[in-house]
Image 1 (cartoon, helix red, strand yellow):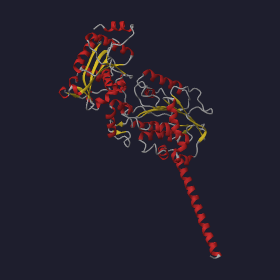
Image 2 (cartoon, rainbow, N blue to C red):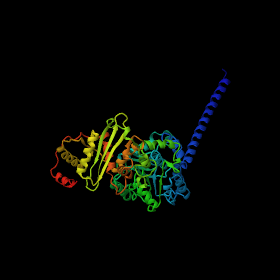
Image 3 (cartoon, one colour):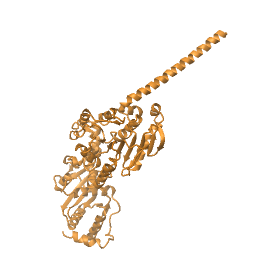
Image 4 (cartoon, rainbow, N blue to C red):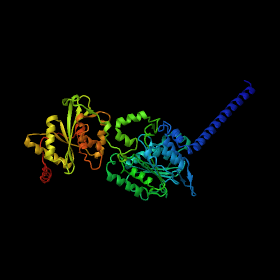
Length: 541
């Protein structure tokens, strides 16, 4: 090869290298432009931000109610000191009202400066994921949220939720590529400091929060996420205590913070319900409340049809029962005028179609323990082949004495020969059960009495058995239709109406399905001081 040819070849290689560098440089510039474009776009497109960076959480387009709430934060305002704040316009309030059930459409309203958002939404609609996690990440990245406090029902749950959130800054490749390493000088469970100075901490409900600061900054965002649990919902004293802590400790933590409360409404006494009532009464200035339901427009439309179409919601109602469905998916509680048991859901079977030997029988006994209630006995059978339930008998007697209760229990025992007779396993009724055995022993009767663990409220017990009646797997003997005892069941809960029949059915069910201990074969020992009072109180029949 001549010298000129070699020179020409070198130039060719050089030009190719220059072209490659130019292409690479253009690619980098293009990539940087795309990143800048995403930065600007997602500043006012929260749904797009979540879908692009968190496809492992966001697999569908956000529902309309989420987009409406996003629009509040996408329109960020700034005060004279450069601090961000948000407003809810009259138009946004109207749009939010339009996706509510009619009875809740009055709740959203216009506010000039947002101080709090009480969010009640159906299960599996992304309350916690979207508003306690992804929205917070958006606000941190864009510098709108400077000090976030996450509060859950206990410290462990709060810490785990926050830790799982902050993992996104370590492992999310899209987030790292566009925004870089955000780790600051503090990065440990429950406490995080970002490179831009933003801080996050997690605490459990009831913790001391006085003086909670980060580099002289007070919290500007406080998230109360699922601080009321299933275990709390039926204890009115606990619910009031939780709200008292929120109003005294959390509300006073920072006068400029935006507070989110994310929780299912269980009843009229829980903190979320109390907050919503105060918002409607204009007792919480700057607060907006929303109370969404999975079905809207009188049940003709689904709130999020792409994820929860009406057919799937109908199936869910059958699975969990209308009481639970109303609370967890429609945000309707018993306080809203609903009853747990409905006449149209009760199925009755003729006596000719059921044979006692085909069923395993249990009694549930609710004595008139305080002397001012009703005594009740429920006779429940579980089919030995299908597992379906049938209520054979449901007896009650207002102010029933111990002799009346024993007489009826013996009569039913001779007819049904139950495998087990369940009493609630609490201290007073345990003594009462032993007293019954002593009364029965002179008659040479040794009934299979057993203590049943039933540590739940009356409403929780009713909610536990109601789905079986609604889905048809628990039927009732035809003779109970229109009976006074069944009317007691249908009226539950009604103030002034005794509820022994519901308790008796609950105890019979628990005795059949998860009775504890062995049937009592003898009276057993007891404290001598307990019996005189018992005998004096109950031997009046």
